[in-house]
Length: 312
Image 1 (cartoon, rainbow, N blue to C red):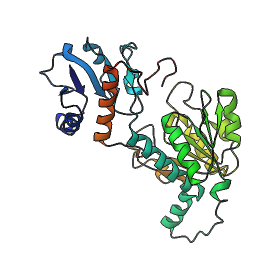
Image 2 (cartoon, rainbow, N blue to C red; image 1 turned 90 degrees about the vertical axis):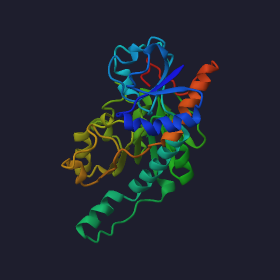
Image 3 (spheres, rainbow, N blue to C red; image 1 turned 135 degrees about the vertical axis):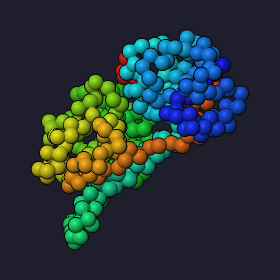
Image 4 (tube, rainbow, N blue to C red; image 1 turned 60 degrees about the horizontal axis):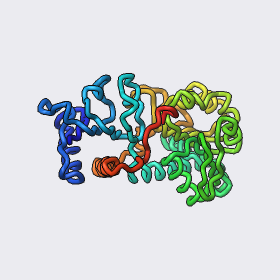
């Protein structure tokens, strides 16, 4: 029984090997490109961006553990067998870090941090009237999976009026639930801050376009920690420049690292963070993968299992 770990370079694999060895001392663990590994011995893989067709070379593969919450780079391979369970990363560190980031971003949007930083950079004494208190600010979270749910709970503790939108109805104390395509516009109309935490599917890409941004209350803010394609960037910039929106905090981009000459670095109203909202430690992710494999061996239902029908 072997576990194969994808790493960009053999030297990069060393750290992963050490933490997996600590949490799975009896597992036969190998680097992704170890020439000594017989493909027929591979039953488990831990990967992020396997080369197309590689997974099909393991005839006895039983389970795929994704190294991240997003699995687009795995499922885009048309040769990948949908019969092999694929589990998205869901360790507690990932969830906690995302909730922390969303709370920070919402508070930063609430007090218009991009405007404060712009004043700092220009040496301008920009004393503006602060927003209403947190208790009167309404946050709408798009995507109420494990990350969205954790963020919603955190925001209610901070004091925001919090609501969430998802494919199906959710029940979280203190969080108003909106569900299905027919209720999206209603959520947007009441959201002073919109947090994008949706999976990347054909139904969600481009979902925040000019038409939907126009539904937001005047002076609203956008926080995107999901997929860059969820927000139509020209429409977002137009809404910022017109004053319709007050700020946008963006952590994900079409091209990463974001080029130094990207206009977004200097765009008024935009705060860029370098895809750092949630980056769990190797140890935490290895432990989660170990727990998933153990649950699979026991025949238990797996959390965060990718559903090809829904795309997440």
